[in-house]
Length: 295
Image (cartoon, rainbow, N blue to C red; front, side):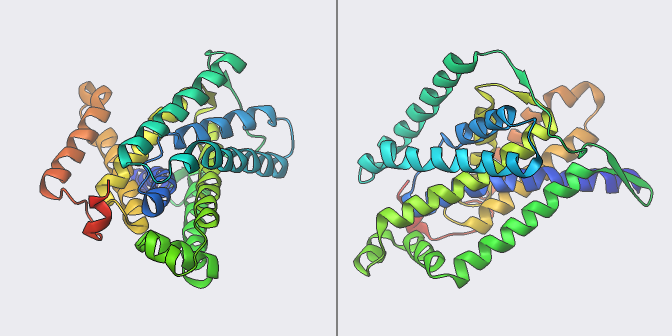
């Protein structure tokens, strides 16, 4: 039972991290039908901002990292995506890849390709005893932050005027524009929120791994995209659900696979994803078909 509870908490923590990544991707897809593969570079830049500020107090680190990632997200929207907003989905897709590789190569030129180490000035890696199990403080913080952000996000979308405009744009962007919703403002707001989510992910990831590379974002954006597809394209709750599903699958396979097969864990995870999509090609949650048809 103790082992089961330990694995359960690990799965919830990892699923929470993946849910945050998937939400950042799903938010832009819901409004623009854009799968932003440069979202991983927002996480990467947040990690390197962390490195620059690692000797500062934790409020300075959090604020500085969030501000830098949000500014980059807004610049990305204004310079790269706004000029091609009305282009076809493949054009948006290629643009996101181009921005991703551009930022990667700029960072390689600026800081080099060698991995760097960083450490948050908080003792989050220390365990906390809960009954018969020892739980990392970082796992508890990750779960708590995710729950708070999901709650705030839900309140924002349902209770604020800007949130209602964002929901309307996600349902039918053209109709929302005809009804007076300002497209530039809504899309910039969506990019800013995705930047906040990316900054939170960057802080958690760096504390978990303590390793930074210019290409680190590729892994996380792939996981976030897979989680979004598994949950169901076009739905924010479905994206969060997909993140938890992938997180639970990853931890479960790590715990239950024979030792000789654990190095192939990721292959088994993606194999499970393929099985899910064979039976549920629309994802676990059914969303409006016209949104998916725009991809």
